[in-house]
Image (cartoon, rainbow, N blue to C red):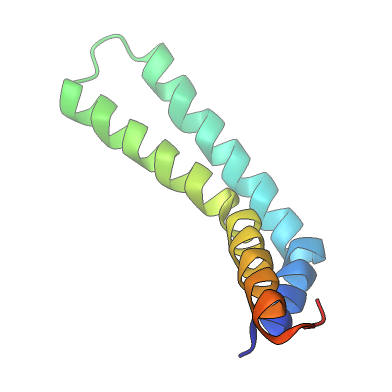
Length: 88
């Protein structure tokens, strides 16, 4: 898939109802994991670290389309510089 096609596909994904729903659910899960850490005084260090890792992974997933679009935009810009013109 060409970078410009991938950019269009990622943009469509971000705007889709499915992604918006997934984003909302993941944000709720992140909040639940954070609250579990805050509300459980006898949680082991391993459990805390596991929950911190799951929060980090969820937040990374939520920002993935944004990061991919930026990378694709940079790749498109580089291609444009090389060939003179490449449509977004």
